[in-house]
Amino acid sequence: MIFQLINFETIILIIVLTILLLLLTTYSELKRKPRKPEYETKEILECTKCRHRVLEDFEPGDFISMYKNKCPKCGGLMKVKAIYCIEKTLKY
Amino acid sequence: MNSSDWSSLFFQIFWIIFFIMILTGANQRIQMKLWSLDVRNKLRVMRRYIDEDNKRIENYLRNLGVENPQFLIRRLANYFIIEPVSIEPTDIIKRLDHLIRNEETSVRKIVSQYLPNIGEYERSLVETSLVILGVLEQVYKIVQHYLIVSEKENNWILLMQLVLVMPQILKYVEIYHNALDPFLTGKPIGDTIGPYIAFKFIENSDVVSQKVIEDTCVLETRFENRRLFIIKAKGPGSNVGKPGKVLADLIENLKGNVDLVITVDAALKLESERVGEIAEGIGAAIGDPGPEKIAIERATSKYNIPLKAIVVKIGLEDAITTMKKEVYEACERAYEYIRRVILETTPPNSTVILAGIGNTIGVS
Image 1: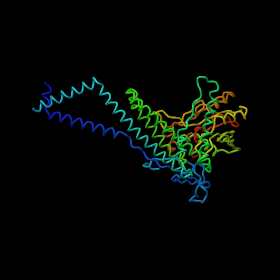
Image 2: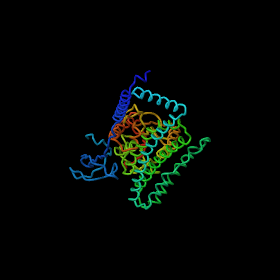
Image 3: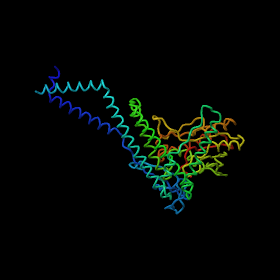
Image 4: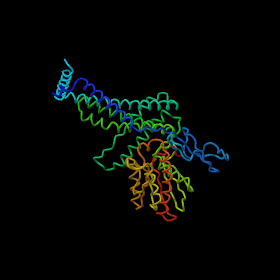
């Protein structure tokens, strides 16, 4: 009989191999999941006089067309031109 | 017993258990337990998101001066609207419009009662944040309902369907959870594409006059030797305005003397499409439940005015979370695209209406 051909050591080996296979599948599944990117929000400020642009961190309550800060070059008023988020790991 | 006797015994017991399980249906019950465990784990993740968002809104309301924020949160997170009778379609748009307006004014009134001293901007952020929380609560309750029903009635087909659809539901829940941040801080979202492009046109044209009707700005401008009317929701709060009704009224006021109507909006992309793709077509690009869209269609068809739609393709995640750089760059390209369309399709001194559709959060 086939059962008599399979000894105790073979059963242990089958169980160990099955566990290994399960671990490998779980690992590859986890590895397949893409990393969730983290974002940070930036805003572009543009001088209303000399058009000089500055990239700054967004502050809650800021909005596009809001006048904020003074131009580091000419001292003119700066206006928020754009607000967007970028991936933290990316260079901008 | 030697080792081969042990293995023989092992296999015999294994087969006996296997057949008993098949005959009594115990294997199915084990499978159901595993499925229900899977759904419960995902529900736990959803509950965590809801509790986090609840806490954030509660703190935000406390900072604005609400003494008992939980009462306001519970009251508005469970707020609902009953759809009008559709078996008798006469006047359905009018009835739907009435219900939508009623809901908006009621919610506004409730928020104003609790927060009498805050501005329009903060009030709009509170309203939208509570709507997001309401959506999350609703999804959670529905999933939990189906899980309990399937367990109670031993309905493994229902449970299996729930297990299969759970990853997608969880994805949507995550998107809504992430959407709370821009609505509590006032950042532009992907859906702001339409109002942002309208704003770009306002900045690059000479404004002749402007007025605000029903939370919607209407500006008459001169743009490249053309009379350009620009319609967008009033910002910078979370607001979509009433662009359809305002556009229809404007066409009536101009007695139909309009050469072109352009609606610009964000559109959900297919998985195969790139974020930021621009597409042009015919019709009203607006994703409202009906009243606004039909108002545009009726007004333009009454006077036989060409109606163009320009859309920027984005995913659902991009639509309700903070505007990404690639979406912002697409807006810049779309502005140039629409400018070219206006110049190509209308002669100088013609009248054009441009409606920037969407939530104007973060854009004045």
